[in-house]
Image (tube, rainbow, N blue to C red; front, side, top):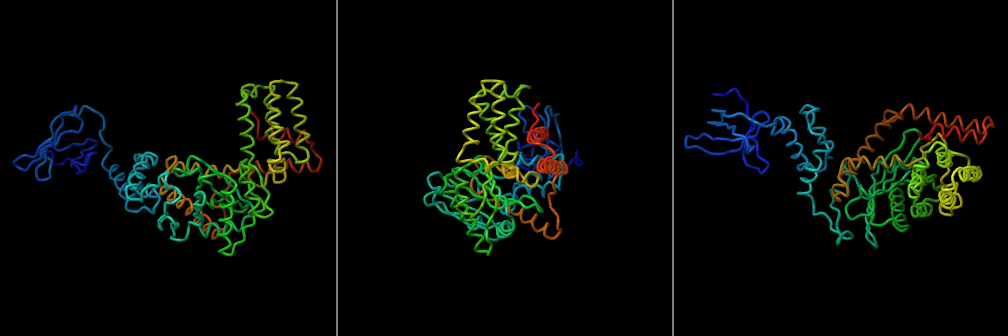
Length: 463
């Protein structure tokens, strides 16, 4: 008799009754006339068996000749509860359900969220409205539950399909915060855009006191001027309904002329600032396209490339002079870089679409972010929560969660009078250092050559 051995009733992957002992799973093989039930190991190569009588273990025979078939039962129970909760409470984001369930098991043993999210989202899809198809992307209706945020407040601020589908979300609390900020950042991504949409476009607001906050989330089927006009105007109109005048002084975006044109039309007197990260990225992309990347990393060349990437850090009126000097020296070092020099001159130095002042960051050096990497970080955060090109309903549930995180952060900062995510000390010291360099140049302690050299040494030293 083995009455002291604990077992748990459960089910096989196909839903058949089963029992679990330790990390082994047994399925029913035979029901005997005396009322006992014989179970055999689910591993077909194994001859281990268990006999139950009156819901108690009567016999255990054979030896398991394999590794663990299933995780310990208490772990499976947490996973099962996670899946049940994912279906019974679709308003609660899966990451939060995961955190709540995880506390009932040993954190080190519970599967990572990334291992469970696919199952959780798949279970939700079974009870959610049918996913829109490509043929009805302009006509599908967003249910009421997805028009509200997690506080049951209005969240959908725009939904149009003429001529192209554009949906825009922002909460009242976030719009209020946006109204207090003079600097906004935005960026689009294809990877986390809902299926059949061209991009997911996010707008963040920045304040020197409270940092960066995600404010507005949108999905669009195009990326043209008309699309961005609709998006930005809908944000401005939604704020106006709340008595908020959106009048940002600066809008940082990637090098997308359609978004820049639309922003200047909607937000009067806004200054467009192009992201320094995307500037550097385009420099390296062109070098790679011209098969010059390896050559550009050589000791006698790499500093010239770094000097070009640092051009947005020098005063606007000296950029052209600085570029001419760099290009002359690079030309003398290696003639193969002439086509690259022509690209930079054509695309940035003499460009009408991207004039020098629009990608220059000297005036606010050390005082605010020079890139929209915070926005891209938000896209990465979203990607960690959902799969690429998600179902539209899963995407909305994820941005509902992000919106709630923003609201909580804003409310905490209002009550505690401090940032919920303070900047790292090394970043603060770096900005203080850049500000000091700027002051030294402006007071003629160092010249343009020394300024550029120090900036490269601090930010763009390639090994």
